Picture (cartoon, rainbow, N blue to C red):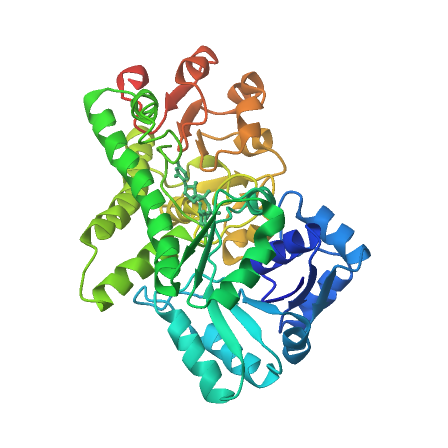
Length: 436
Ligand code: UGA
């Protein structure tokens, strides 16, 4: 099938590449000429495992094309996906100016029946607005609007797209639904067909539920610390109940990234706007915020004054397997340590370049390895659970530190093992008895 994706960010680019990988003819449109030039050269502007390979392969096969020209894109595809950013407004609500602009740009370029798909995460009833907008700017255009939210996770986006748990298609027309089913046929995944409003809600409700699970276990972690219990065991015991499941019950510094903080704030704003305030989600946000505060308090309690202390921070990305530092709790933590006068020596396997080019880059020392960051440090803080941090030479790390104190903000390491290596170990929600 001929498909068009408008917006070549994380979602648009990976979705376009995966559509091409299963045999569709895909044209990706982006108004950033520099980005399109980069992509045409075969360079991928983001780090996402497996993405570069499928982009290169499908460009070479002629199934994946890039352009800055929206009318050319609309002309190409029978189905046109909108995958542009939906950034937050200062009050948490969603700024839909890019969606509105694309709807206006698409309208005059529609010369035959098109399915226009909202792929971006948008508030419920955005589909209605897109329909109204296109009809206003092109009264004779023949089209249907569909909501088809994405559920890909950064760091495993290609795998999530190629093997989805489910495909949600929100359509109010059988013709549009039939075309969308054809688009997804090669993925052999369960399809849930809904109305447009329900599909839009599914995305916000799914992300909010996952964030709720994280905040739930983080609230339990605070109780574990106060009662000398181990949140890892509690999560194990809860998660063995099939109705609950173990995933997204990892206690730590809380959720970050470009999706959860924004989507939870948006869902709160949407529910307020609809006159049915979702107060539970306000608590989810608060617990997430408190989690970092409690961790910093713990560091302060153990190290006392942070001014002039050398602190190694392992991990800057918002989670492993990505170079993305947007709304990263690790970055927030580093900023807080710096604000208290600590000398931060940081390492991240993929995100160093992003941080080097940010204002924080001048305020901390960026190191080439976790071992180098720990040299001469008075504590190591694990802020992102990159698996390789569990395999460093801990004897070497201990010997090179001024004091072997480890604050594991992601419960990556085993407390007993770290004690055997001679570290004073502090995890999240793992009681205090082993740390006294
Ligand atoms: C999330 C959802 O998982 C995807 O399904 C969704 O499509 C995507 O948002 C989106 O809206 O586009 P992502 O932001 O890539 O994906 O990352 P997650 O793997 O969900 O992690 C989000 C944050 O939660 C990270 O900071 C992670 O460290 C944290 N987390 C996750 C925990 O603190 N504990 C957990 O148990 C799991």
